[in-house]
Amino acid sequence: AAKAAGKSAYRRCTPALRESAVGRAELIADLRRAVDEQQLHLEFQPIVDLSTGTVRSAEALVRWRHPRLGMLSPARFLPLAEETGLILPIDRWVIHEACRAAATWQAQVPSATVAVNIAAAHLQRPDLIATVTEATAGAGLAPRALTLELTESALIEGSDAVIDRLGQLRELGIRIAIDDFGTGYSSLSYLHRIPATELKIDRSFVARLSEDTRAYATVEMVTRLAGAYGLGVVAEGVETERQHDAVAAIGCVQGQGYRYGRPAALDELRTVLAGSAPATVSDVAESGLTL
Ligand code: C2E
Ligand code: MG
Ligand code: MG
Ligand code: MG
Image 1 (tube, rainbow, N blue to C red):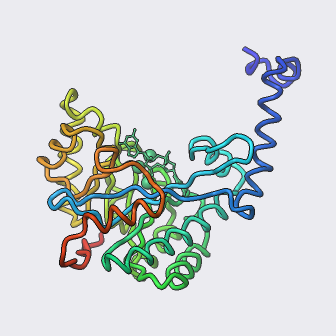
Image 2 (image 1 turned 90 degrees about the horizontal axis):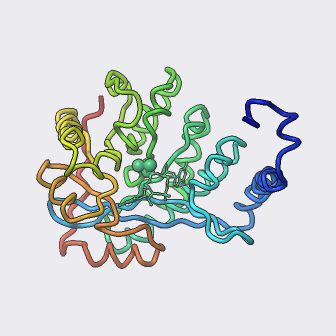
Image 3 (image 1 turned 135 degrees about the horizontal axis):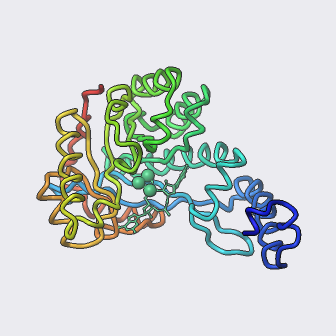
């Protein structure tokens, strides 16, 4: 009701609500300093090859150690970062850090790769290409060892310029994953325009696999679609043995989720990579075909 009554009602609102509005402004000011003051850090979550159980890849996930509020998850600060444009320097920092991390893993496991999440705003920026090439070159990482994860909604709005930019990234060897696949618009026609290399099946489908036949059918359908299009496919949010068995039986190529490992510090991931790597490391198979 207060919201509907507009600004005057807002000014009369409770002290607690006013505090939360101040809190928001403060949080934005704090976020502005967070990158420079090294309050951000990355955790890495393993991505497992379901047929062999090996880990050659990990997704970088940003965290903010706030000086007063403690550890904040992306859900707490990414919406603010996106509204204010601060997501651009944050993601740039993430890309650089993730490339450096992957380069250190490659000393142990030459085929190790890393995935980073990219906010939609980056796609509008011509300097995305420079950011990515500087990060990979600076870390001594081959571009094919970096995957950019984009959400369906970011891609669907893609203008020709955006599609061109993604095509240029692909030509450089950068991989492109469609994150949370299945949660955006149901039209598949955009898949033909996007030069994606893999689909990440949203965890809401994986979570309902055993009790919801439609969720099962969706995971099956996306896995088949990926296979037919020559794309990689990752099941997200695999938490239980039962979900693992189901996605493996369906033929999903890779899995990610608490069943295999929670997001963890760089050193922990290094241990996971070393422990799961086969004696002879074969090179990462490029999933090749782009549409
Ligand atoms: P996402 O890219 O889909 O990442 C997966 C999220 O699911 C992560 O949450 C991860 O911790 C969580 N997760 C992984 N396995 C499981 C599981 O088995 N069960 C459950 N319940 N959750 C699982 P997180 O780290 O809180 O990140 C949330 C979202 O924030 C990410 O979703 C991504 O969209 C965004 N994000 C994270 N880091 C960055 C970043 O550096 N830049 C940008 N632009 N976005 C980021
Ligand atoms: Mg992601
Ligand atoms: Mg996801
Ligand atoms: Mg998600």
